[in-house]
Image (cartoon, rainbow, N blue to C red; front, side, top):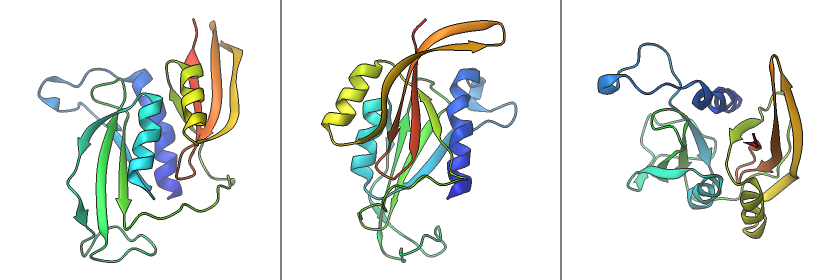
Length: 178
């Protein structure tokens, strides 16, 4: 699970570096197109990412866990499974897959540990997103605040906040202001 979450950190940076897919959809090298999260309640997770600005790109038909599937603790062959791919702004990179593997269940209590990644996603409309997340009962760890970001040779203002998705992934949400 930690390896999967670490991959999301790379996924968050991909749209900023992305180029359009080559003609025919074939890549010239290694790219991270999508990272899939195992989720407890796919509908709740999809709603969370919709609030951030992602849209459903693919909705698979409900199925069942098959022999040789992912070795998820507490999930057995024949349990229900569902899969949705959420797409952000880039038409080719930065997608998030949501896989509910087994019946809906409550996630474990949130506890960020050393080794857990913090996922960074750039969004638009920070204040609207924060208000909607709060109104719909999603956890906000730190409310939006504005800061000056100074990098090598450039500087800009940005808003940021921290939120926790329904499955306990910490997200740093940013909005570049200028």
